[in-house]
Length: 176
Image (cartoon, rainbow, N blue to C red; front, side):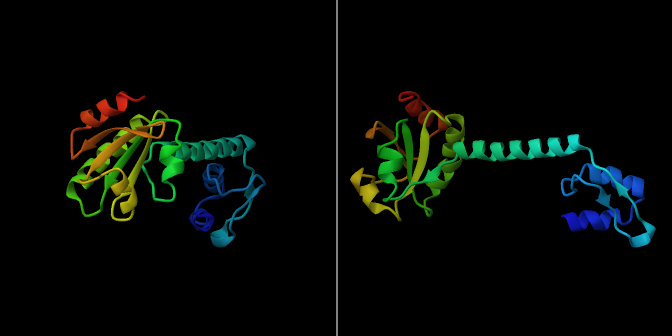
C-alpha cells in the first residue's frame, strides 16, 4: 500500500503530494521524503494530530471487530460441549443441523439474527449432527433442524423444524 501511494505521489506536485500524504496512514511522523522521479523533490512535515487521529481510529476498528464476534453463532463439538453449553452461566440456544439439510439452511439466517439481537443475554451454538452424532443421540434428536434451549446446564425447551423467527424468539424470552 505504501508503494502504491509512493507511485501515485510521483506524478503529483510536491504541494499536492504533501496534502495526500498527510491523510495517508503509511506515512511516518517525520518528514515525508517525496520520490525523485519526474522532477519532484522536497519534503513535507506531517501533523501529530493526524497521527493521533489515525491511531485512535485504528483502535476503534479493532474494538468494532471484537464486538461483532459476540453475536456470532459458533460451532460446538463433542469436546467443547460441556464447557460451552452445560457449564455456561447464561441461557444457551443450540441449533442441531446438517449441511445437506434444506430447512437447516433456511433457518441459519434467522438464528444468526437472533444471536445478534440477544448478544450478551444468550449464547448461540450449532451442532453438526453428522460430525457429532453422540450429542444428537444424547438429546434424542430425530429430526433436523432442532433448536434446544438450555439453562443452568439443563435442556428446557425444543423447537423442531423451520419455523418463523417469532417462534424462536418466544422460546428465548422465556429463559432470559
